[in-house]
Length: 116
Image (cartoon, rainbow, N blue to C red; front, side, top):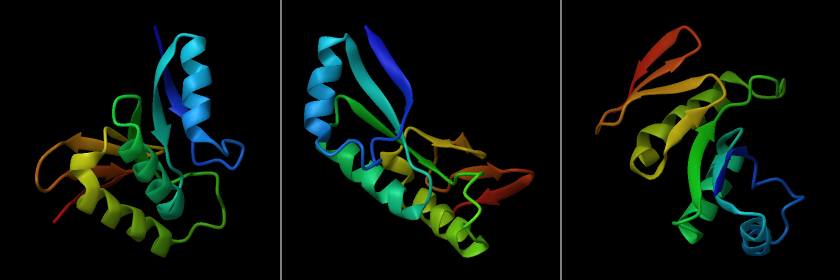
């Protein structure tokens, strides 16, 4: 049994995610940790995890190499984490979930943020 530990299922290359998961299973890949890269792809990742609860686990992210992302984009991801923390398994790409509580504490680079 294999779990893909970092996959961007939101990528347009995965047009038919249920089929991708079905084919993956034939190669003994039983699950995917799906990682978003910004607020939009995080939302898609959450949607996919909601559709395949036993095989897709969502991690929200803020991609450090996407130069078009702004501070406002980071704030949007921070809001997503605070609002959706009970639906995510982790935080990727420079965002680290410190504890899973009603008010999650995040470390973003060197900055620590307490959720609402």
